Length: 239
Length: 196
Image (cartoon, rainbow over all chains, first blue to last red; front, side):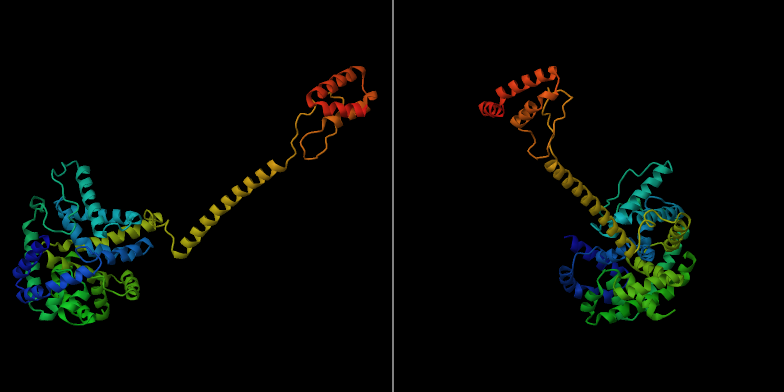
């Protein structure tokens, strides 16, 4: 039942983005995708459990750079999560930073029983709550479902308060992104959508698109590169 | 920037990079901030595709975290556990050292226990043989391992050397001989009679 709801949600998302070609591809590969996912080891919503574990192992062996990759991978999710608690954007960035530092210090104790992101999610929620308490504010009366760490729709009351400037900036970014995706050749667009929205592995995408894994890797990169060139001017101020 | 490196960055983000490529790329990322920025933007693209509310401001924190961890290591020599964590070889040696130390302690305890048990079994047992004998007599004690001196032999010794003792001691000796004879039984009395 949940899988069917998720499928409808993804179809809606593709429809909203005007990606009808991808929608038909998605429908065609859905059954194949289910089969492949059944055959693969259990993965998290990003399909990354085992792969994050590889980076986590590196950090635990003292490779700080591997932690940078984990930060890069999850910074957006964590900032978005913390902004549900801490509404001021700059304050939310500080709390996110603190959450990552705490995670780094606690990483030797991470045994890999859960996905890395689930573990990080809990640290971030606790850090945000502690921050609210330390600022002598009343903590939220409602609690986030800490199991729902894949970023799906949570309590709508927890959405952050946006300023008009931020809304305008995000609208512009969204428009530029939609234009960039529209301008992509179909095979690049399908590859990036199957990867980023569906979270399929390269192997699963190669099955769906009937091409080698190396081609999938190249297509996804080219799609990202093209989109990056379009949005770089809007994101440069943020970095 | 090389397209090949950027393609590797894209694959790294998807965790689809081969292990040997990952090793080299991570080293490169440590050196070159431009590549870190590219990785951050690729990550943002994915987030924007999944959720249009993604905030580009989040791109800032990657460098901030990196700076904070590096600064903390520089100032204190560690970030929590990091200084304590040794690299592969030294960690292995430390582990081996701990193992040897433990084994050494165990061996020492075992050796002490064995020695103690051995001494307990082989040590001659000195029992009070003559509680009532005058201290002026030195009773020869042979290390026979039997743990006691035969009463008949002692009695024989006392009887044959009684001329060297005082009258008081002789009375005590006589009393001892009589007492021994009642304790050890007839065979001892026979021995005394033969000695006499």
